[in-house]
Image 1: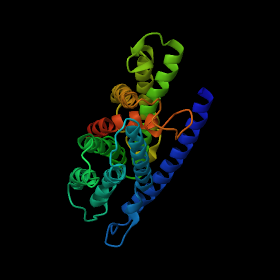
Image 2: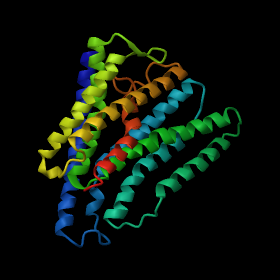
Image 3: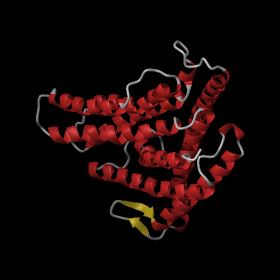
Image 4: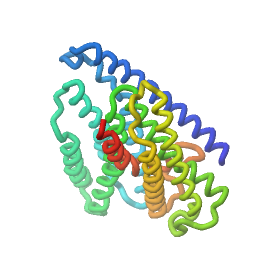
Length: 314
C-alpha cells in the first residue's frame, strides 16, 4: 500500500507540476508583455486571456469529475441528485473567477457579481431539474443534495482559482503550489506520525485510523512546510515578495492542518452515511477523487482569506 501511494502520488505530483509550470510560463510571458506594451487589453488583444488558464481548467475538470463521483456516492445511499446540472453549475462557479480576473486585467466586459447570479440560477435550475422528473419521491432530499454538490465542490473549489488570481504572472501559480503543498503536507505528516507513534484514537466513531499523535504531527509538519515555503519563495526573485511572513506562515500551516483534518473527517462522514469505504476508485491506493480533494476543498476559502490579509500591506 505504501509503495503504491508513493508511486501514484509521485505521478500525480509530476502531472500537476507540469500544468503549474505551463500556467506560470504563459502568465509570466503575458505579464512581461503587459509591462512593455501599454496597449495590452485593447479590443482584440488576447494576451492576458492566457493568464491562469491552465490551472483554472484543471480546477474545472476536477470539480466536474468530483461532482459525478459524489453523485454516485449519494446513489449508493438511495438518493438521486441532479448530477449533470450540478456538474454544469460547479464548472461555472470554478471558471467564473478567471473571467472576473479578465474583467480587472484585460478590461473584458463582465457583469459584477456574476458568481452570485450564477449560484442563484443554480438554485432555481435545481428545483426545475427535480420537478422535471415528475415524482415527489425524495424530492426535497435530492434538491438539497444537488445544491450541496454545487456548494461543496463548485463554490469551495472556486477558491483555488481565486487564490491563483490573487497574483499576476508566475507568482499566482506559485501561490497555488504553496497552498497545496502546505495542505497536503499535513496529510503526509499525519500519516507517517500516526504510523510511527499513533496510540490514542482521535475520533474512533468516525475515523478509527486517525490518532491524536497523527493530528499533532500534521500541524507541526504543515507549519514547518509553510515556513520553509516562504523561505524558498524569497529566494526566487521572479515570484516577488512572499505572501506571508515567517510567523504568519507558521500559523497558516497550523490552521491549514486543522481545517484539512476537518475536511477529511467531513468526507469520512459522507462515506459512512452512504455505507462505502472509498468515494471511488479513480486513483489506486488513494481511493476516489474526493479522498484526495477533501482537505484542499475545506481549506481553500480560508487560505484565500489569509492570503488577502497577508498581502494587504503590499
